[in-house]
Image 1 (cartoon, rainbow over the protein chains, first blue to last red):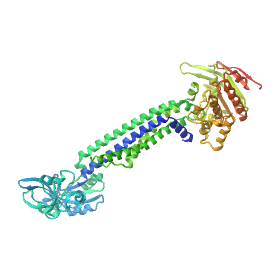
Image 2: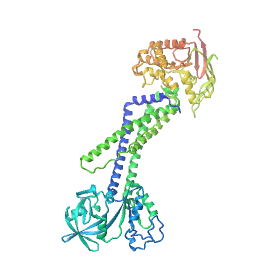
Image 3: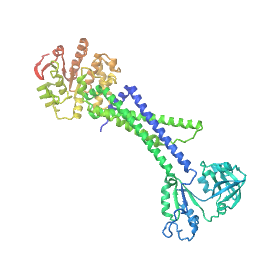
Image 4: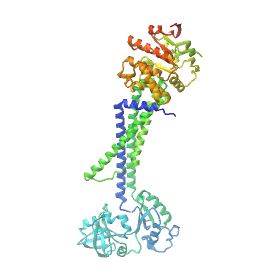
Length: 405
Length: 230
C-alpha cells in the first residue's frame, strides 16, 4: 500500500474546510474519552481504596490451626514435617510456629509473617463489662500489618508486659483513657490488671475492638503454649490467593486462607463494578463511532464533487477511501488528545473538590493504561467509523458527478 | 504512429432492464497535435464518446487505443493512473476544488501522480498561470475568482502533467461570449505551444469553425467528419 502525501493534504483540507463539523466531532470524541479516563480512574481509585481499607490493616494470608477441618494424620507429606507430633493441642494452636516462621521468611513474595495470639475477653469497669478481642503480637512484625505506629491516636504504640494498646471503639465504649488501669478477664473467667499505653484507630469497628499486648503476655494470660495464627502480608495483594494455594501444597497441617477467600462478597462486588464500567465504556465508544460515521458520511456526500474530479484526474479508489480513513483517524487522534487533557482536568478537579469539601478522599488512580486505553480505542473506533464514507468514496463513479454537474 | 486516439467498433449500452444503445460501431482516429471538436444535438452520445475516449467510461464493446496502448484491458487503478499521466480534463463546470487555492488546484494532478511537487513543477505552474494571465490570482480560492478566471485555472490544471491529449467538455458553456472567446483563444494557443492534442465537445458553431476537424455525432453514429484547412 502506497500512501501518497496528497491524500493527507486533501484530508487535512477537507477537515479544515469543514471547520465547525470537524470541531464538533473532535469535541464529541474528546468528551467521550474524557468521561472514560475519568470513569476508569475513579473506578480504579475507588477499588484500590476499598481494597486498601479492607485489607490494608489486616493480613493478606492467614495460617491457622485446622480447627474446623482436622487433617488426617500421616497423610500430609508437606514441606514441614509436623504431622508426627502427637500433640492434641496442635489442632487448636500452632505449637511449632518457629519452624513455620523460618520457612515463611524464605519466601520472596512475603513481606512479613507475624505470629499472633487471638482470644476473647472482657474489659470490666464497675458493674459493666465490654467484650473485646485479645491479640498478642510481636513487634515489629505486627506493626507491618496493623501499623500501630501510624494508627495510634494517643499514647505510645508499643505494648509490653501489662502495658497494652486498646482500640478506639473499646476506649469509647468503656471510657478508658491512656494511663488508666483496668481489669481484663479471659474466657475462663481468670483476670488481671492492665494499664493503657496507647489507643489506636485501624478504621474498622472489629479491629478497633481489640486489646493488643505482647505475644508472651498473651500466651500467659490466655494459657496458650503455641500461637493462634500466623498473619502474612505480601508485596502484591492480588497474588495473595496464588500464594495461599501454593502454601496449602507445602503446609499440610494448617489451614491457609487468603483475603480473597475471606472477602468473596467484596470481590464479586468489585467484579460487578468492573462489568458495569466496561459496559458504560462500550456504549460511549459505540456512540462515538456512530457519531463519527454519520458525520463522515455526510462529509463524503458533500465532497462528492471534489472526489469525482479527483478521480477523473487519476485518484484511484483506494486513495479516495484513504482520504476518509485519514480524516477519521485524525479526528480520533486529536479528539483523544483533547479528551486525555479534559479527563485529567476532570480528575484533578474531582480530587480537589472532594478534598476541599472534606468528603471521602479517594486517590483517583491515573495510570498510563487508564489514559491510553480509552484514547487508543477512540482512535480505532474513529478509523473504523471512517470505513463507511471510505467505501462510499471508493465506489463513487466520477461520471455521476461530471454528468450531473 | 500518428494517431493519439484510435477507436475501433465502439458500442455503448446503458441500463440493466431497459437496455438502450448510445453509441453504434464508432470508428474514429484522432491525429496527434490537432484540435478536434465533437458536435451534435443533445443526447446524441457525444459526451459519452468523449468520456470513453477520456477513459472515464468503458465501452460495452470495441477497443480504445490511447497513445498506441490498448487501454480496453486495463483495470480501474491502471485507468486512473493512465488518466493522470496522459490526459488533461477541462469540464464545463470548472470543478476546481474549493478547499484549495488556484495554484494548489493546478498542482493537484501532479501531486496525485508523483507526490509533492518539486520547485520546478511549481515554477511550471506559475509559468502556465502567467501565460494565461492569472498569475496574480495564484493564492486565491476558487470562490474568489470569476467564471472565466476559474476556467483558466482549470486549463492550467489540465496542462500541468504535460498530457498527450486534453479533453474539454463544453469548456465555455458557462461563460459569456466575450470571456468565452478569450478562454478559447488562450486554450488554442497554449495547446499549440505545448504540442498537445485537443478534443472538445461543443455546441458552439463558432468554436467548431475554429477547429482542425469537426466530427458530428447524431443518434450515436458519426454523421459527418470534416477537416478544416486552417
